[in-house]
Length: 218
Image 1 (tube, rainbow, N blue to C red):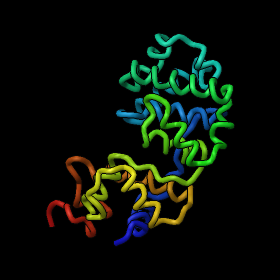
Image 2: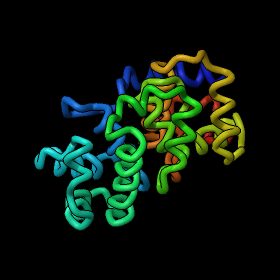
Image 3: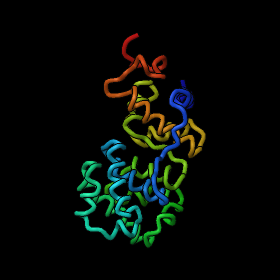
């Protein structure tokens, strides 16, 4: 079974996902904030933090950059690791204002390769976070790899590599270069990981059961 067949099976099972969920009139900035806050936590916790920022009218770059670090820490506390994440948000905002005068759209218009290099140069932004920003905020076709992707690939026998670039290249080489397909597939893999392909998997119920090399039971 190839990678595109995995996508088709998951799409048929879970239906359309239409990620990334946003709640404001400034969705691209909200996506960037969410991508940084979602590191090492669940989206449910990120939503609480984003609601706190939204209630204070802080989902705008200039307003968020102007508040004290301690206040930002308090507002994003539900997301976990809030002291680290507050510094990461400040790092991003500092970069945005120094290099783009706070203009997120100008940053996101950069060619994919340059945009990725610039995002990765910001302390606290790694490959998964950078690629989430590129795919969902800049809407450029790049495949986001996460822990669920590594787990699924290893169990299905696609690859046991834990190298981000290797797994990303595998998906991008085998799939049409389509941002909407990449968005949907990433979201579907997250649903698979949350519902079936857990650390302790629910193999009997999994839509990929018949193709899985590591399935438990018959």
